[in-house]
Length: 147
Image (cartoon, rainbow, N blue to C red; front, side):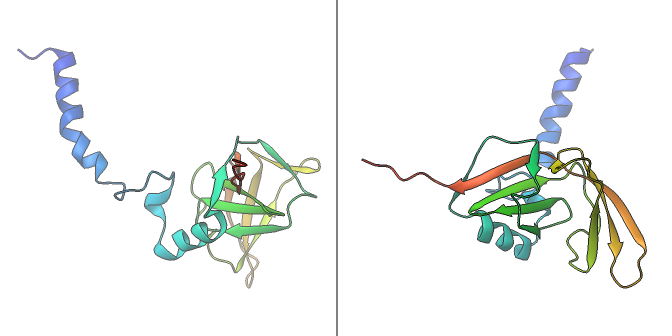
């Protein structure tokens, strides 16, 4: 008779290769499995050579001057030379299409993790899905070593 713990372990061992095949080789980046080559290029263009910092929950609106749509679950916010990466809490179908308008429900002078927004089709005015922002991770150029 097989012990229950032994059965669970056997299932995990059998499922390991299947689960590993879901992520492309060499992609340790969160959300990388869902990116197209063009989306990966956009991410590299804006984050390449920069180092991730401590996540922040809110961004004051006066600081950000550009929103870049990378995919249906990744947004970038530019603030001078710093770029904030936001992984949405779930996919937002259609976000990557630049023709849709993002309408953010905002309470106060900051955009925060947990804030919701919805998409509106630019040509028809039809409201699309409601989506939720995640935490913001700042990316800055690495400090030069003085030695």
